Amino acid sequence: MASASTLQKLEILADAAKYDASCASSGTSKRNSVGGKGIGSTEGMGICHAYAPDGRCISLLKILLTNYCVFDCHYCINRKSSNVARARFTPQEVVDLTLAFYRRNYIEGLFLSSGIVKSSNHTMEQLVEVARILREEHDFRGYIHLKTIPEADAEIVHQAGLYADRVSINVELPTDSGLTRLAPDKNSGQIEGAMGKVTSDIAELKDARKKFKHAPRFAPAGQSTQMIVGADTATDSDIVGKASRLYDNFKLRRVYYSAFSPIPDASAVLPLKRPPLIREHRLYQSDWLMRFYGYKPAEVMQATEADGNLPLDIDPKLAWALKFREQFPVDVNRATKEQLLRVPGLGVKAVHKILASRRHRTLRLDDVARLTLSITKVRPFICTVDWRPLMLTDRADLRTMLAPKTEQLELFSA
Image 1 (cartoon, helix red, strand yellow):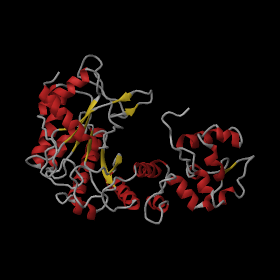
Image 2: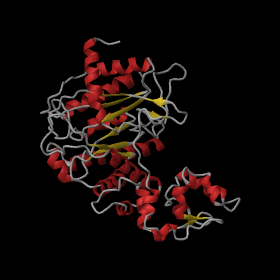
Image 3: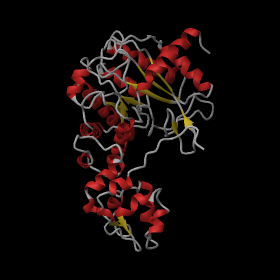
Image 4: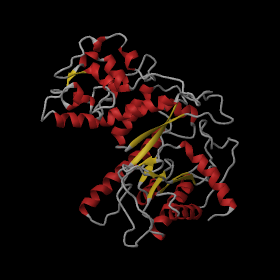
């Protein structure tokens, strides 16, 4: 399939791509090769170590075009001053690898990023060339995600959107001061300007397709971005605020969070230890609260503790409920959907089932228990026809009662 040289480059460049978390896909247009036309297919489900509704693990080839880079971002292992093994693919080599991996049923798509070589425009042209060859010369219909370069000319980035299902531009850090300090070659205004241009291109061509059947698609799976957590002094409040502004201003599909990981020969301005991975998880939970549970950014920020960070021992939804106990308990037989979504332990599906069930009967505590994973977490915040929490909601030790119990696992326990 490949020479030893290509395999060595693949080992280096696949490993170098692992730090980019923004590679799941959702919302893309469906394509397939039924009838013998084209190669590959794409379904509107997650790709890259994600799981489809039927339990399938769906993967994509996730690599860098090159890990050479003219930038010197302190947090990046591929910065120009880093002492790491370097490699570089040609566009044709990436195309050959993608097709070879697809034909062996290893992957269903491609995630391609790159360090900056020669210039931003040159690198962006190389990335676009990979997608062009796949789409035009091989009629590849699988998923393609291109990491675009904000410093590149807008016309080249536009070409990327015509070939890729999703494009993304990393904002890197939540604050302008952090970006200036840790990535002196990058500019937040330039990054957001590029994101704004992609947003307008998506909207413009989406409108064009309503009027003209054969108008080209532009990044049908939208755009996403990624922020590094823990490399600077930004708090969770800063990160939540930044994410909210990005969603509002650029209609992003996703904001991804990546916990900072210490790198070899690190700069003295970086922290010596990585942040707890649970912090990254809490930020994803807060992201879901804003996207699916109707929480405003200011409300999520209210769930943070005195240092501006979300608590690590409990989830943000429970943290908010404990701070605003006057909002509870809510009557599951009368509360609105918005009120039920605020109840810790009730997910979106459970709330929809409650709303459907109470049309036909008055719900009891046992009925609610069948619709949720943990009735213990729900009980202090609801009342039913046969249950009222009385003073339970106001107990001083309620947080301790509801926080997940930690235990040391034993490898050879009896």
